[in-house]
Image (cartoon, rainbow, N blue to C red; front, side, top):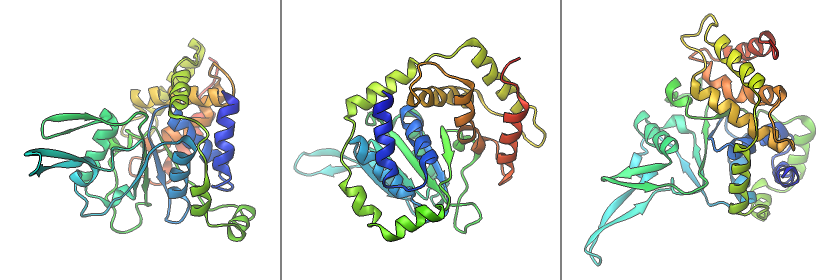
Amino acid sequence: MKARTDQVIESLNSILLGKEHQVRLAFCGLLAQGHLLIEDIPGMGKTTLSHALAKVMGLSYKRIQFTNDLLPADVLGFSMYDREAGTLVFHPGPIFAQVVLADEINRASPRTQSALLEAMEERQVSIEGETRPLPKPFFVIATQNPIEQGGTYPLPESQLDRFLMRIRLGYPDPRAERELLEGEDRRVLTDRLSSILAVDDLKHLQEAVEKVTTSPALLDYVQRLLEQSRQMPGLVYGLSPRAGLGLVRAAKAWAMMNGRNHVLPDDIQAVFPAVAEHRLEQGESGKSQERIRHLLTSVSVIE
C-alpha cells in the first residue's frame, strides 16, 4: 500500500512544487475520510492542489466560487417543474461530486456556509422533504482567505470543527518558484495527469486505514493532549471529542502512508498541528501555533 500512496504523492508533487508535507497532509485527509480547509492568500495553488488530487484519483470534481450572493440552492441543487414529465425534476447542485472545491468559503453568507457544512457532516442533503445521498467517496476542500481581508464572514468555531484538517500552503521556496517560472502552466500539466488509482482502490485504502491499530499507551497519549488543551489559559474550551477522534483517524492514515499497520507517537505529532490548530485559535489569530508547540513539548509521550 505504501508503494501506491507514494506514487500518488509523487504525481501530486510534480504539479505542486516544494509543498510535499502539505500534499501529504491533503492526501492523508482524503484517506481518513475527513474534509480539508486551506487558509491562504490567493494565488498559492489551492485550486491546483484540489484539481490535481481529483485527477490523480480519477474522481469527479466540481469547483464552487463562493460569493456573498450565493444561495444554498446554488450549492445543493433545486427542483423545477418539467412540463413534459408533468412533475418536479431535481437538478443536482455542484455538491454532488466526489471532490468539491469550495473556493473562498468565507465570502459567502453564514446561511450558505451552513448548507455546505451540513452536507459535509451528514454526507447527504435534504431538499423538499427528500433525502439524497452524496457520492462516495466525498471530499470537500474549502479555501478561506485570511480574516484580515475585506468582505469575509469568518467561520465560527463550531463550523471550523467540521474540518478534519487545516493547512496553509505558503510561498514556495526560491528553487521551487524558479521551476514554476520556467515551467509550463500548472493548469496544462494538471489536465495531462492520468488516474493512478481507481475509485475502488481508494475505497480499499480508506478501509485499510480503519484497520490500523492503536495501542492503549498511544490512546493515553492522545487523551493527555486533549486534557491539557482543555486546561490552557486563554482558551474558552479545548479540543473536543470530535477532534480526538479525528486526530486518531488522521494518525492512522499517516501511519499507513508510511507503511505501518500501527500508530506511533510520531504519527500523532505529524498530523497534530493540522488537526488541532484551527480548533485552538478561537478568535486570536497566530496564537494557535504557539499553543500547538506548547502542547507537543509539554505533554509526555510516556507516563
